[in-house]
Amino acid sequence: MENPILLTWLNDFIFCPASIYFHNLYGDSDRISFQERSQINGTAAHSAIDTGNYSTRKNIICSMMVYSQKYGLLGKIDIFDTSNGKLVERKKHIQTIYDGYVFQLYGQCVAMREMGYDVKSLAIYSLDDNKSYPVLLPENDPDMFEKFKNLITDIKKFNLIGFKQTNDKKCRRCIYEPLCDSSLL
Image (cartoon, rainbow, N blue to C red; front, side, top):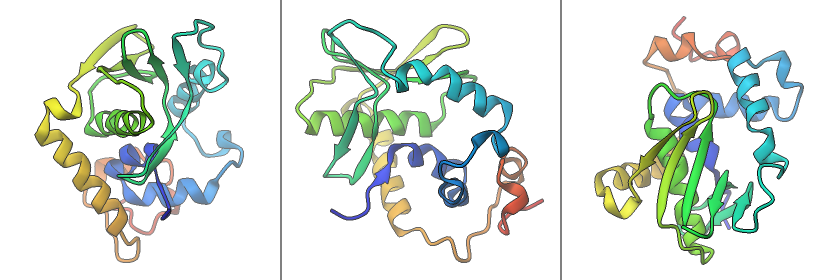
């Protein structure tokens, strides 16, 4: 097995490939020293899933590790309901459904299917406003699924040396910007 791509990287890479490097550099160090309030709040809101305390219902699977051999993806799902085949990715606050959110779900979906689960529907759930946003299954959105596969190829081929960010708005929102030599600021 080659080094797997973490499911969270699918969203992070779109934001900025350099952020993955810095995230791994910090590792499990004290997050409060470098995360912004919104990230700390998101981690706290996700704790019920991560600790397995979200539900005691037998048909609800939470925080299960999944792996896709075909795409080389590894990570955890948020919630899967075995009674209806619904796979849900939870976010603290959603203003826009970014491609990265959808690609995380696609990664979870393909991994779960390889593992024998019958994933029938996908959704992204916003905790702050209790809204659920349906997402088309990969086979029902071929253009988006192709973008997903291309992203995986881009991640596998990426080289941080020589990378320059082209969007200063991303640099302004990045917690690692003060450390990054690719910053536009």
